[in-house]
Each structure stands twice: as structure tokens, then as C-alpha cells.
Length: 483
Ligand code: BES
Ligand code: ZN
Ligand code: ZN
Image (cartoon, rainbow, N blue to C red; front, top):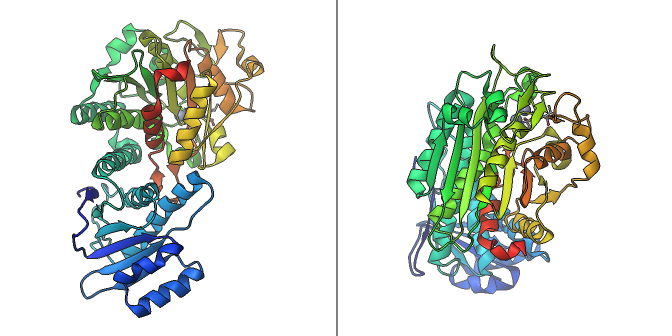
């Protein structure tokens, strides 16, 4: 089925369903569109905080959506995205698949409304043998100049397209997405959007001695992959790249430290960081951002086999450090550590890794925010937090106190891959810190990456978290961040 399209149209176009966005003070400007009775109805109901009115016409309809002003700008934008999603629910009831959005409020709010409506329209129906024709979904959002410029519309189209792509990749079950297939999908994104991809296979990974990735892969029927992505436009404003690293575990059973079914059923989401990184590069390429970017995605499953790596094993990582494996379910940090070491060769301006790394991150913020931590300077941290607020893919910093490193001490190897029962999210970050020697941030997206039930425009299962965040961040990223 064709994906939803957002299209810029000229003012005068007559449409079947017109959505008018208005604040309370602007109700009088609705006169041209509504009858006297409808006007007084809207006035009465708006006074009682009713948010949405639907008026059928002989041909088409008029839907008035009240936008409530909020003090905090971040909250206002998010509320408007959510308003877009709830309008979408109304449209579904009336089986409307095409709308035109006219705006009487401020521009950035209107764009947020369209974004929420578009993102909420996502459905993952690939594996349904029959899709009910009753499930009519929004296909086209026409946007008048009062709502957004043609350039805004084009950018938003790409954002929506690549959030959907991320969700598709996360939602694809393990039965249909092996390590090899996930790597192929990433290479296909490179082809489609015009960034470079180099997919390293088993031989190359072995010759590089990426011990973390090789160990996690040992129980598998499928070979590992290491995806190296690059977007390097001639007009890039940075010489040293901004590197994104994404965890690409296509399925996490826990390995020999096997998970119970309850926590395993949704572990197809364990490549959400890798998908977000690949789709962020695609989005940067689609919109031709003047930023030099590298993406690194170590890819494998973590399953049980007769060759599986085992608790008690000592492995030698790509960096040369040795690790005592205490728990094979703490596999993400092992493959990320190799990727973080690989990132050194770029002399990066900044490295950000994105991973569904710990259950502790889910327990800390649920799906409302990601935990983050790292060694980059305050200016970079604030810029990332700001991007988190603007996109409402919020993050909150956890400390990398040196005392937490004690937890990782081992008598048989340089470090262990697991600490004590407490502060698991921080200790995972502390583990990764052993493999970086450049400004670095680690984002644990385990909470928001996968939703058991939908939450507004964040549809259920894969949420696509990370793409809007990293894209906003890379647009604001400049070399000055490092000063
Ligand atoms: N992939 C999981 C983390 C996870 C949990 C992702 C929930 C998404 C939702 C990770 O590999 C893992 O198993 N972490 C364990 C590590 C533990 C055994 C040290 C955890 O945090 O529970
Ligand atoms: Zn695990
Ligand atoms: Zn995992």
C-alpha cells in the first residue's frame, strides 16, 4: 500500500474535507466557512473546552480543530502533535482518506499538527493475509501555505517516511529478518537515499578480531554483519565526522543466559538503535544536510546454539581488552564496544551510540524518556537535550561516577560485562566508556523504542524513536559544539 503523502497546495484549492486550526480568539474568522448556527455552536462549545467540531457538507466536510495555547513551547508543540493524532482518529470514523489543512494559528504549531496526524497514521499490515476494506486510513494531507511552506512540507514528508521505515524495520519479526537480511535492508536504504554503505561480512569481522561481535554471534546459524555507513557531502561544515553507532541485535533470546518468554516476546526490537542510525543517515541524505556523518551498526542475533559463548568465558575484544562474560544477555555492550573502538579511526568530532541496552532504562523512565550519559561537554549535552525536547523524544542524563567502575572489576580479565544488581543502566554505560577516547554520548532507548500499546502518534510496537531526535541534533550540530 502506498505510504501517506503530505502535499503542499495553493490556497484556492477546493477540497473534500477541510481542517481548520484555530485558537479561541480566532473563532470569528470561521464565519466564511460555517453557518450562523454552526458558529454559535462552536462558540458555546469552545467556551467549554471542547476541542474539535465536525460539520458534514453536501460535498466533503469542515472540521474545526481548536488549538489550546500553552505556556511552555515544547509542551505546546507536543500537545498539537497529539491533537493531530486525535483528529486522525475522528477522520477514521468518517472514513475520510484525504484532507486539506488550513491554519489560523502560528506556523510551527500547524506543522506539528500535520506531523502528529501523519505519524499516527502508521500501520504495520505486511503480515496480515487480509486487510479489511473498512480500515480506511488517511492517504493524503494537503497543506495550504497558511500551514507550512513547500520546503517544510518536503522535509516533513522525508521525516515521516523515515520514521515509518524505522518502525517497519523494528516491527519485522525475527522469522523474516535475520542479521543478513537486516544488513541488506540497510544497504538498500543507502542505494535509495544516496549514502555510502559498506557491509562487512564474517571474514572481515574475523580478520579485524572483533571479539565482542564474534562471541555474541557464536551460537547463531547466521553470520554477523558490520554495517559502515557514510554521508559525506562536498559542502560538509565539519571535517571530523559525527558518528552514530546503533545496536543491531536482530533478536535477543539472552543466549545461554536465556530470557523468560515474558521478556523475550518483543526482543525483535533489539535492533531499534541500528534502525534509527541507518534511517537518520537516510534522512540526512534525503534532505542533503551539509554535515559529515558516519553510521556504524554491528549486527547479529543472540541465540542459543551448540557453539554459544557461555557465562564464565573470557573474550578478547576488538580493542584488545579482555572481558569476562558473566551473563550472555548483556550482549549489546559487547558488540557496541567493538563498534565504538572502530569509530576511533575517524578521529570523530563526536560519537553518539543508540541502543536498547538495559531493562533498567525501562524501569527508570518507562517509555517517556531515554537515559543518556557520556563524556561529551556540557554544550553538546544541552544541545542534545534541547533536540530531545523539541522532538519530544526526551532524554535525561545519568551520572558516570567513577565509583561505578568498581562494579566491573574482574579477577580473570580486564573487566566483566556485568556489575551487581543495582544501577544496571549506568554500569552498562560505564562498560562502554572503556572503549572510547573521544567525546561520546550513549543513549539507552530501551524504554521508548518499543510500545506494547500505542501512545498518541507513537503507534504500538516499534516507535521509531531516535530518528527525529538525531536528525534535529545533526541539523544544529556544528564544530563550535566542541569548543
Ligand atoms: N536487549 C536487552 C535490554 C532490553 C530490555 C531492551 C527491555 C528492550 C527492552 C539487553 O540485551 C539485556 O538483556 N539487558 C539485560 C542485561 C542484564 C542481564 C545484565 C538487562 O538489562 O536486563
Ligand atoms: Zn540481552
Ligand atoms: Zn539486547
